Length: 50
Image (cartoon, rainbow, N blue to C red; front, side):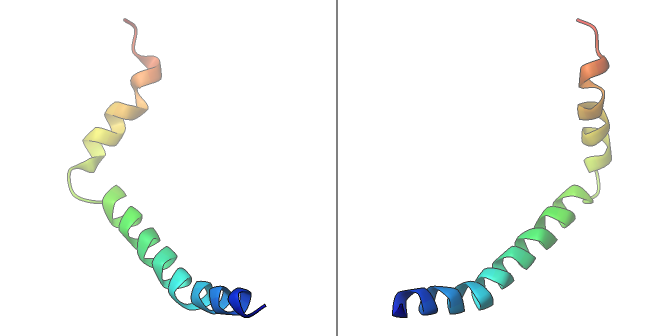
């Protein structure tokens, strides 16, 4: 049971921090300058005719 407690403590502290930083990174990546054109092009892929 000691291993479970150690892993649970680690997940509660550093795991939460990692997930929060990952989320902030994804949001910053999605809203970075210049990404709007790339996102618009990707959104139009299903509508393009070959």
